Length: 105
Image 1 (spheres, helix red, strand yellow):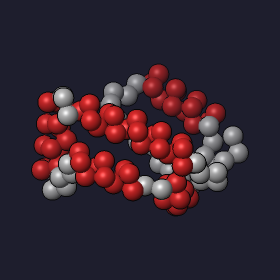
Image 2 (image 1 turned 90 degrees about the horizontal axis):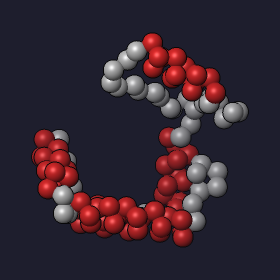
Image 3 (image 1 turned 90 degrees about the vertical axis):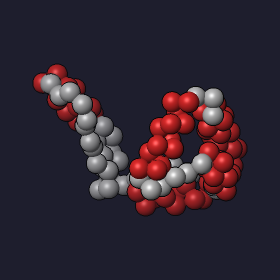
Image 4 (image 1 turned 180 degrees about the vertical axis):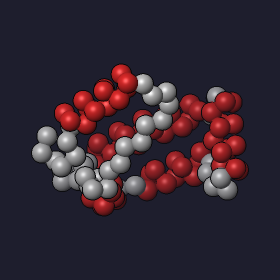
């Protein structure tokens, strides 16, 4: 994403899929309650129609610009939420060792 970016066709396919998800959520009262309830609480209310309009304005170069800014090893962080056990710790440490963030693995 940082180096090659997406083609117009790839982005269109992703947007189409996500728009289907958003449209489907109109039939799910729980999803709408979470969306609008959170929006009111956070003072950041976004309608489905607004999200869809903004999705259609996205361009591959927008995503590549943002990727180059934020997808850097020095900018990446790990947050683990939930029950934590010794088994979880070992699994996370194994993943971190096998996937170094310096771009060399």
